[in-house]
Structures are given as C-alpha cells and as structure tokens.
Image (cartoon, rainbow, N blue to C red; front, side, top):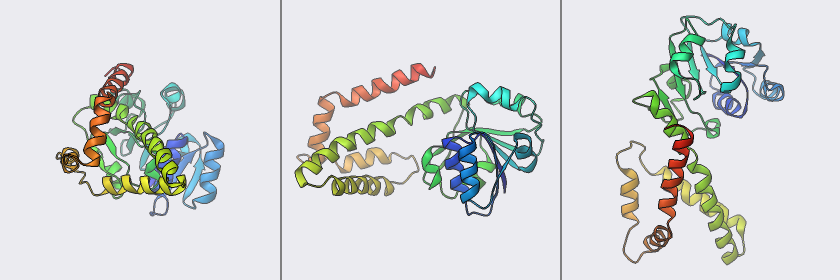
Length: 251
C-alpha cells in the first residue's frame, strides 16, 4: 500500500514503526521535523514530503493532527475520491471530516496507541474500514463500533493503563523489598500480567468474568487481596474516576 501521514507526533511515529518492513511505501509530512527526519533515516521506505505531496502519493491518508491545527493544515489540501482517510482526531467528527477531505468518501476514525509500533494495539473504529484492516489488522485487534458516539468512551478507557501500571509499581516496590531485587520483581510482575492477558480470548464473550471466577477460590490469595481492595473502595473509586473522564469528554 501507499500510505501517507499528515502530522508526525508520537502516535504517528508509532504507527509508522508498526508498518515498517511490511512492503508499504510510506509518506510523512515535515511537521515535527526531528521525528520525520529520524524516521526517514532508519526506515528505508519512508519519504518526507509536503502535505499536498503526501496526499498526492497516497492511497490511504492518515490524519494525525491535533484538532486545533487540523483546519489550518488541511484548508487548501486537495484529496481524491478514490482515497481512504483514517483519522486519529477524536475532536473532528465524521461529518466534518467529509467536508475537509472531500471528495474522499471512505473515511473513518480510530484511536491508535503507542503499542501499535509492535502490535497488539486495540483499534476501535467507526465506521468500518478495510484500509485500517489492511494496514494493521494482521497484528492488532480492530474493533468495529456501533456508533460514532462510542469512540469517546473507548478513548476514556485508555486512562486505565496508567492506573494499572501504578498498581504494578506498588507491587514492584513490595516484592523488591521482600526479595532484595526490584529488577527481578518488575520482570516477574510484567511477565505475570502479560501471560494472564495473553491467554484470554479477545472475543468479548465474558472472558474477564471467567478469569475472575477462576481466581475466586475461597481462602485463596487472589480472593483475599481482591476483597481487601474492594472493601477499601478501589472499585468504586475507579468507577467514579471513569465517570469524571466521561464528564470531561461530554460522554
């Protein structure tokens, strides 16, 4: 595929790295010059071009701009009807994207995260996009949403990552103190979580509840710690925190 990126921030960089070495021609804009130059220097199939040149050369154009500059950057850019557009901008809705990218009609919004560079990144998308599947579907889970309004709640849910990592940091400190090695403690905990999540089917059919049930043996260590955390209000605090994010994002 011939794939272009308008905007080259952290997320776009990860997306480009996720495509490297897979037979694509990749075109990126000069925005965020150091990142663009670095990508072009380490990935042979990457070329740095102007915004219009990126659009002219690409079958699929990925919009990795901030909402605040999107209008200005795309104001005079000419798209083609036969192009696909994949937007990473939650602040610009589908209707507005159709106006900005006309006459292109195959347009979607998705939410890539930094782990897309290596794979296993969930990609909620609306509407369905064959272009997104072709780019990333082999190594990442593409989740087709039922409505555009479902995008923002999925974006809010990404905040769980730092919360989970902060709990692992507490566990690392505890385990490191008890064993004398925070290095081995961290390696163990990350491997523990990786193995736990890797073995769960990603079909959405109640696998979280199944896993919790399998760890709920009365008197077991998992059951005891979870009971303590629940009684301490951790689950209620998480639900409340997500609701605060929902208010912030007008969900």
